[in-house]
Length: 447
Image 1 (cartoon, rainbow, N blue to C red):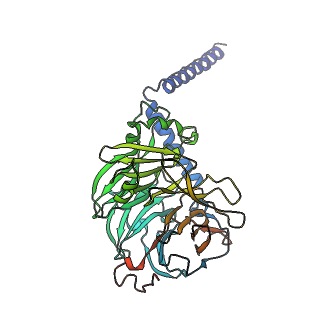
Image 2 (cartoon, helix red, strand yellow; image 1 turned 90 degrees about the horizontal axis):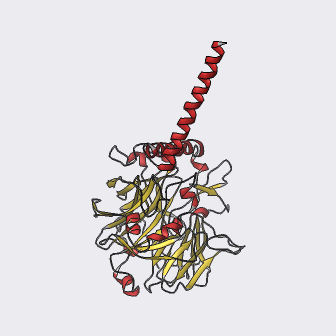
Image 3 (tube, helix red, strand yellow; image 1 turned 180 degrees about the horizontal axis):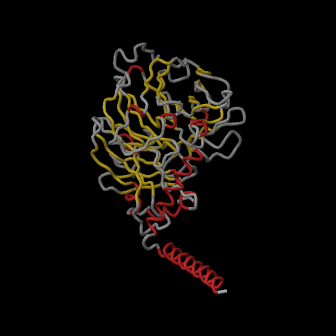
C-alpha cells in the first residue's frame, strides 16, 4: 500500500512540476522576459531549418522554375522597323549565367561564374546552398564587357549572397560578399548603389508587431572598386520619418505563426539623377527611389539625412522596379494589381503627384501576362517598353499602343517532360554603339 501511495505522490509531484514549468514558460512568453528572446530566436531558427530541409529538396521544385506556358523558344516575334534594335542582356535561373543576345535570339556573348567559385570564409553566408539553388538576381554590363552580378540563394534566410564584378571572360575582378540582393544602380561616377540585408534582433518600440528576429534591408554605396563607402538602414530611416506609421500595413504572413521576419522586402533601388530631380519637385538629386514590396509602397531615401522623405502607396500590389522617367512620371511593374482577363500583372506609368495612370500594359485572354514575383521593365529610346515577365521566362517589347514587336522566350527547360521554364531576372536593352570596340567579338548593328 505504501508503495502505491508513493507512486501516486510521485506522479502528482511530477505533474505539479510540469504545471509550474508551463506557467513559468507562459509568463516568460507573455512578459517577454529572459529567456524569451533566446527561446524565440531558437524556435524561428529551427523552423527555418525545417522548412529548408522539407520544402527545398530539389531546385526545380522552387520558384527558380515556373510552369512553361508555351513550347516556343528563343526569338518568336521581331518587327524590325518597329522595335528598338540592339542587344538584350538577361540572366536565367537555371545557372549562374548571363546572356547577351541579338534581336534574332542569337547568343553573342555569355558569362558564367558559380557561387562556389566565388565564396570564401569572409562571406556573410557561412553555409551557402549548392549552386543549383543559386541565381543571379540582377546583372549590369560595363562597356568593356565587365559584368556586375548579384547572387541569391533560393530558400535560404536571408537569401542575399553577394555581389561580384567579373571581366568579359568571367574572371573575378573583385567581390563584395555581404548579403546583397535584388537590385543595384550605377552612378555616372561609377559609384554602385546596392541593396543588402541582414538579420537583426533589436526591438522597435513603435512597431512591436515587427518582433525580432527580422530581415532588415540596407542601401549600401560601393566605390567602383567594390569598397564599402556608406550603409544606411532602410527600416531605421522609415521608423524615424513621418511615414513610420505605415508599418502598421505589414502583412500577416510576415508576423504570424509562419512569419518570415521580412517586413519590408526592398526589391529595387533607383538613383535620382539631375534630369529626374528637375521633373520631380519632391525629389533631390542623389536620393534613391526604393520599392518596399510587403508594404506595397515606394519611397525616397535621403542618404545624407538617412531618412525616408517621401512615400507613396497606390493602385498596385507586390510591385517591382519603379523607374523615374525623364518627364517625372514613374514606370512600375505591378505584379498583382490587374483584375481582368489575361493574368494578374500589368505595367503602369503614372504621375506620382496625382496618381493618374497615363499608360499601362496588361495581358488578355490571347496574350496572358503574369509574374507574381521578380520582373521589371525599361522605357526604350523609341518610346517602346521592354518588359521582363520573369515567371513566364519571357522578355518582350511593346509599342505605346500595346503591340508586341519583339518577343524572346527562355530556350532552357526543366522537369521530366520540359514542362518547367527557368525564371528570368530583369532584362536590359543595350545599344551596341555604347560598347567598347571589339566587345562583343561579333558586333551587332543597332540600326
